[in-house]
Each structure stands twice: as structure tokens, then as C-alpha cells.
Length: 213
Ligand code: HEM
Picture 1 (spheres, rainbow, N blue to C red):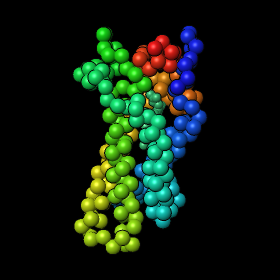
Picture 2 (picture 1 turned 30 degrees about the horizontal axis):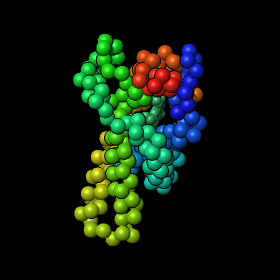
Picture 3 (picture 1 turned 60 degrees about the vertical axis):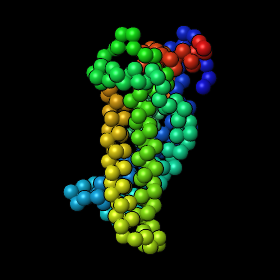
Picture 4 (picture 1 turned 90 degrees about the horizontal axis):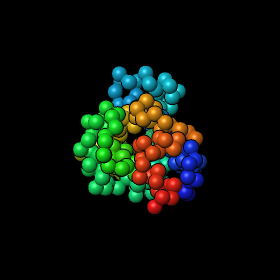
């Protein structure tokens, strides 16, 4: 990450490649979710009409899932280090109720590029996408693989469980990006955040990108 001039009112957070990768992930997630829900239960069948009908949904679903998993690989490589859980994350988690109320914690730990909530979400994405990929490939190729019915059923259950975990995580992720932490969307739309945003939410990261240490 490049350093920024002291006093600059915006701080770079994501470059164009990172942003394009993220939005590829977001679009493929939407398509995989709509088609997956439509295939999962008849009460969600109406969702298939947004994707061109039942046949289109069935054909699109595994490819959208695959694009999502592949697009996440570079993101995992770029961000895993920034998402390692550190001592100060434990202190942040102890004040979780205050953070959930969006209250400033006086004397609280200084947060780096991501807070402990974002880090936990990151690792839940890693786990759920891995499980979705493996179980999804089994379900996609079940007839070719000639696996015992037991393993196909286990894969079906694992696929449903992992998609539920990812879906719940994404509700929190999207809600906090759009409504909760005001100013976050600018990071993924324009690649930069206000210096005041960075100083307030990620002071340790702000000092680092300013080149203070
Ligand atoms: C409409 C959907 C989405 C919106 C509005 C959205 C918004 C955002 C925003 C604003 C950030 C920057 C947060 C920051 O730098 O503090 C971000 C980061 C990120 N997003 Fe999304 N996102 C969406 C979908 C997704 C999906 C589907 C995934 C993965 C399956 C995802 C994974 C990530 C990851 C891994 C980061 C980096 C943060 C980290 O590593 O903890 N996003 N997103």
C-alpha cells in the first residue's frame, strides 16, 4: 500500500483490480443466491423468473457459484494477512455490544485495516466458499462420479448449510457497508475513503498508510 500525503482528505483503500474483483464476486453471489433459492424450495421458485426461468436458473447456478469461488481466490490472497486475529481484536470483541450500537469506545483498541467483525466474516467466507465448492462439485458431477447416495446426500446438506452461513454473513456485510458504517461504500465504489473515516474507524491502518510508522 502506498503512503499518502499528510493532511490529504482522501486515503486510497482499494485499487481498480481489487474493486472489479469484488463486484464480480458480488454479482455472481446475487445470481447464485437467486438461482439457488429457486432450486432449493418451491416457495422461492418465483425468483427464477428474474433469471430467465427455471432452466436458465438451473444452468446458471453452478457457473455463478464457480465464478464466485474463483473470484474470491485473489481476494483471499490479498487480504488474509489483514484479517489475522490479533490481541487488540479480542479487546474489540469484549466491547462488541457498544460496537453494535455504533458507539465510540473511549480508550478502546486501535483498529487496523479491518475490525474483528470484518475479520470473522472474512474467515466465515473462506470456510463457506470452500464447503460450497467441494459439495457443489459433487452435486454437479454426481452421476459421473458414481458416488454412493450417502455422500451425495451429505453434500446436499453441506451445500445448504454453507450457503445459509454465507447468506447470513452477506446480510450483515451488505447492511453494514450500505447503512451502518457510513462512508464504506466509497471504498468499494471509488477506491478511496475520507481521511476522517479512516482515522475514526481504522486509526492503526490510517497511521500506516500515512507512513507514520
Ligand atoms: C451488494 C453486495 C456487496 C456490497 C454492497 C459490498 C460492499 C463492500 C464494501 C463497501 C467493502 C469495503 C469495506 C472496508 O473496506 O471496510 C467490502 C469489502 C469486502 N467484501 Fe463486499 N460487498 C458486497 C458483496 C460481497 C460478497 C458477495 C462477498 C463475498 C462472498 C464480499 C466480500 C468482501 C470482502 C472479502 C471484503 C474485504 C473485507 C475483508 O477482507 O474483511 N462482498 N464489501
